[in-house]
Length: 260
Length: 257
Image (cartoon, rainbow over all chains, first blue to last red; front, side, top):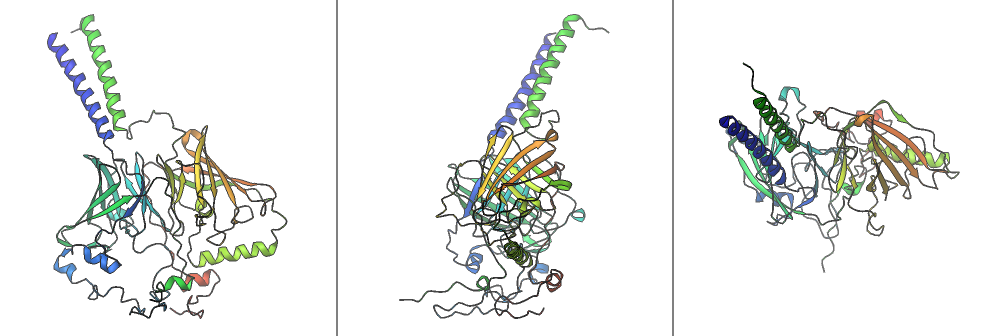
């Protein structure tokens, strides 16, 4: 009888401890909800300048030969004039028709750009949206699995699963449409895995995302880099990122002011 | 072998404790193992899709100033927005043919459409006033603030841009700079249907407020969103289908591909 009572007590203690552990894990879910603005701490200044701040991917020979030869020539290659112009003189950055009129492009999918992103956490899904047109990014935290690439419409955002680990959000993304990564001059494809670790500062005001791109077919060793963000102040709201393909000004540079 | 009554009582007690702890354990996971849990009428999170029987749209009672010419001008704006793949905004966004991903956080509710020509809507729960008109840049979605009244989420939207996106409103009329939209979101049918009434208030456009109602069906919890259909403003075949002409925005001359 005594042995039975001890065993019963042990079962109760074990289950109660497990329940407590679960509650503790839930208690360490970081509060990531809100708007986040990328910090250009290195002073990149331009797309090309920012590109130079990231480590370059160590690609397998098969992928290294795919790199465009003019990667260091900034915005060349779209048929537009990009040479320096006189102050007060705008110039065409994109030729009409050189880009699509909606969605796609830099800053969609898993990439980030200079516009803030907005994150909402729910028990089944984390949704990340931006100020421009286009669907959000869905990170499932409901225990589902990645779909088979053959049954999934590959896209720039891939398929993302998340879980919380030691107070951080860890996201695994795969099933990408073939293409380049926005930073580090790497590539991604259906079997590439991107691991992102969302690391919130103790005061909740700064977020660092650690990126790791891994795919033995593409990388000699994983491409790793960090990007930091600051939390938008309380009361901030989303503004409209208006991009009108019919507007001639949307193809021009900013107009440099006359220098005095 | 038959156990003694004392052992039976003890075993029943242990089972009760183990059962209770198991329930606690399962609840602690906060996940998917709660089929018996009653529907939380104050949680709109999920994927919601319109169906063939989802729309109840009476004709709008238009103000006298809304002439055929005024409506034709608004139609022209809408045609332009479609041809050039502009962000279409409200009310288009709430009527997209694919599921809306609605996620309810603590400070806001985000509505994300599977569309390349609509930006997500943000319904702010943490403020009760719209931004000052002096600093707000009017937009195709407008600014939305929300609060709960009983089991209904009441959403108030102003600050629309009359020249951005698809301005025509279901049932008649259009979205002007003075438009004021009030929506009521309510879960019905045991949480499987989301009912939204839309009321547009704009005395220059409507003699009486214009109200219509949409019902969205909840998708499976394991729904997988699909990539949105792209939109290329320079697809000559598409422009031809829409009845337009592909012209260069810079030169104004026909563009050949």
